[in-house]
Image (cartoon, rainbow, N blue to C red; front, side):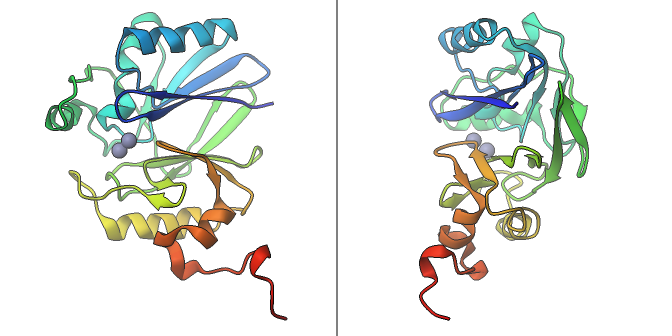
Length: 223
Ligand SMILES: [Zn+2]
Ligand SMILES: [Zn+2]
């Protein structure tokens, strides 16, 4: 069984998501711990639940999603998965621009690509490339558990911004429409910021995705 725990870290309230299953193995997606207090909060929870971290998975390498990576690597030698088009070492630029401390980003990474299977314990996720918010942004999809980690590609009722370095609005819309909107409606989404949602709700209510316009239960007023 898949377990999920989300923390809201750093001044951007980024969703740092811990995933683990019945084997005790787990991963942390986008560790955004900004200071010692947040690092301790994550560490304590991991030891409380006796989770054996086997990897760090990144949806993209913006500073709010990688602040906590180096701190975790200080204690555990585990791989950091990220798409090769992401540039963790460039995250300091953006951090400085928005007045945040620079993340330590001198860590080794393991490349992931479209269709890759990434796993821990008995749980498997598929990597879906969704460029647009950043060139190498990805989502992680667990078909068996109907779960999609969307990073800053898709939010509840919104989509990621595309005005930052490497962002592209057209690419983002095509990514969401072609890669995500065809997933089963009951697929739960955990975005990089804000509330959770599901694909069905986003298809019909997300104002950025209106062309989809599929009728949903509450609209069934005609034959
Ligand atoms: Zn971002
Ligand atoms: Zn973010």
